[in-house]
Image 1 (cartoon, one colour):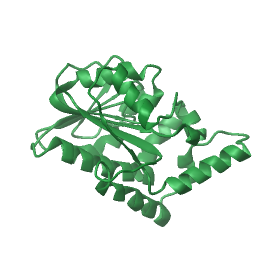
Image 2 (image 1 turned 60 degrees about the horizontal axis):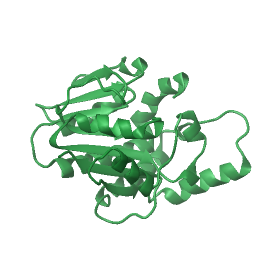
Image 3 (image 1 turned 120 degrees about the horizontal axis):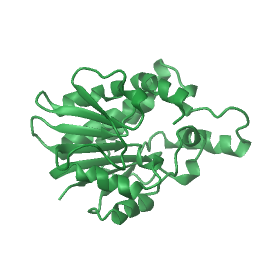
Length: 247
């Protein structure tokens, strides 16, 4: 990720509809998959800015905790109460094996040259029965400036994500597309931009949004999918979500 863009990333996480909607979906999935245990230790690998992890504290519970891990030390400057932060590489995580209840890799694997190694490292941290939750950008046809500025290596299909788990010799994950409800406008914008070309500065999609009513509506529409994920088949989407429990 470009350094200047990385500096602004934490700001986007506080208000942008994509982050807000994704957070509500992931909270629902975590609570469903982790059951009723009162406290949990959760690690978010490739987590980005520390302030972007505060939404996980309620899921962790009062006796649990949240740990962010990122290779870029710039993200560790604003660690909030109730959070811990470790500077480290997903392909060689500086954390003890079998030590946490859940590992999140939220839009991380697409940055790695070796996504298989990243998956193995993430699962290494899990206690027996612990949860690995992965999200990645979906559909190579949606490739655009957002992927370029984020230094993505790839976008995934359901098959290529499943193949990555298989190469890592992990159990078969449950995989679903999501961000389906907003797929038509997102896809239309990206396909039109690619057809017309993108001369000049490469801009993030986040730069085209502003806080306000429209942003709130989009966040609410996206968040509705928390009732659908892993319950209703979603044949298409801007992203993919995979879950698997450690043996």
